[in-house]
Amino acid sequence: MTDMSATPDDESLFGAPVLYSRGQKVVHPSREQYVAVLKQAIDAGYTMCSDLTAVDYLTHPGRELPSGIAAERFEVVLNLVSITERTRLRVRVQVPEADATIASCFDLWPGTEAMEREVFDMFGVRFDGHPDLTRILMPEDWEGHPLRKDYAIGRIPVQFKGANS
Image (cartoon, rainbow, N blue to C red):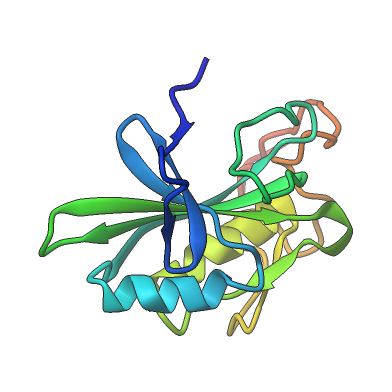
């Protein structure tokens, strides 16, 4: 069950549709609007990106989205904070499986460098313009992306350096 709902006037923010989730404003830009919306959010005082992650909706495709926003397999989610206004803004962007790429927001918030690398490593979503889009948690030669819903379930052996096997 969700309490996400559209506003009575079909509200938009920075040119993108808005819904509310548990009292928090959630803006839904397209991939094409993404960077422009983030720049406008900074201008509006959202100077801190506290989190950037992704969701794989492969096995749970049903979710509430504003009209005109098509559900895709992946969703990149950012949580922005306006310290001066003491408010939060969530940004949710749909990313298709066939072209799992989105622009990097590293130039806007350099602190997202590691978060974008983690999303790339765990979900396989590529961030165009990222300065060092390499694996951050898994070994460089690892095949696949462990947080994808179609990733094989299995036991991964723990390896300890210098331990006798």
